[in-house]
Amino acid sequence: MCFFRWLPAALTLIALPFLLGFLCTPMLPSVPSDAGLPATTFSPTVGVSLATNSVGSPSNITFSLSIPQDDVLPAGVFIDVPAGWGVSADTAVSNGSLVGNVSGYFTTDMTGDPTCGGGGADLDIGLIEATTNTTYTVSGGDQDGNAHPEVVEDENQNGLPDGVDLYPSFLNTLAPGTHKARYFGSDVAAGISDLFVNVLVDEMVGAANRLTIIVGDPTSIPVFGTNNICSPWDFTLGLFGMSVDNPDTILVEGDQNVYVNPSSSGAYTFQATLVSELDADNDGVSNGLDNCPITANAAQTDSEPMPAPQPPGDGIGDACDPTLSEDTSSGDHDDDGFPNGFDNCPLVASPDQADADLDDLGDACDPNPSSPDGTFHMRYCSDPVGVGLADPGGASCSSTPASPAVGGLAEYDPAAPSRHDASRWPLVLLLAAVPLAVALAAFARQHTAQQ
Image: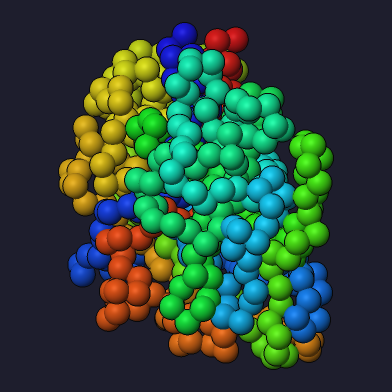
């Protein structure tokens, strides 16, 4: 029954640790000089498309990001909308209007397959124009004990989540300051858990606009285990050219410009910088998915005999398992309430799952708890689109920073830390479905074990 002690919190208060892996202040680690080439692979594919390419016209924009099978997943992403685009501020669009959506598919360990990939989880969340007034706030946690975060409730019964009418208080800590615009979205995924997303829009130097997506309230609960989420993986962010009326409200919103194509024809390049998950033992498996994260074991062998109909393995790899022939404590070796496969310290009790450096190695067993452990990849991606002319094509990702394109921003430049200081990366893009997938995968394994 220990599973039920942590499932409500994991489902309701979304932590998203491995995709928001470089939250706030941790420094990005350097690839060790003696480590050789990282064994992990990270080959993302990006794409941007416009619903219409007419000069000066409102147009829906669709961003897509895919990670192929057997690659590590992103730990963070920046997406920049090129200078020249008309991006409306909060004051220009009615609160409550629909302005976009977030969707995706994530591969998970739904059936207990120790190699991951036995199932998946879908995500589909509508984005609502929300207030940027930071004075009147609402909690991202469950303050009234009803198992729902306050931001998804509708206290004034106007048909909108409170996270639209009020400013989520945790954003004042995680992304301080006033933002150009904010979008809020929530859903009850699989009829089980409340997922919520905030999208912050900020105008950058050169008049480009950066999108930052913050999933859940990472300040409400400790980082939760991230095992058994793997590639292939697909993510789509849709932004509306014009706002759409929200059927859940009495007021009539919509038909206001949100994203408007540049007033001059030409090729405009959308850019993104992606950072992969970490691999502390450089065995090709990222920390959050590795059943021995600090002991190299590329095969991920986990041969514990398990009662039928479960597959072999207790969630701790043979290379680091102190009890190879025994599933100690029924899948929770350290008796801390977190099953081995979803515990960031499966051999050392860590009931708070604290992970100060957010590298998916819990503080209780992390050899360097104050700095992230592991090699990683950086990819610099771009996709030019045509405005007033045909799409030029040429989407690409490279390990070399791109130079500024027409209407674009320079990518991460280690020589210019004031522009993209890795030690101060904001909460970055991605994936509301992951904590749900983690919890559902854990539920599937626990349920199988009880049969």
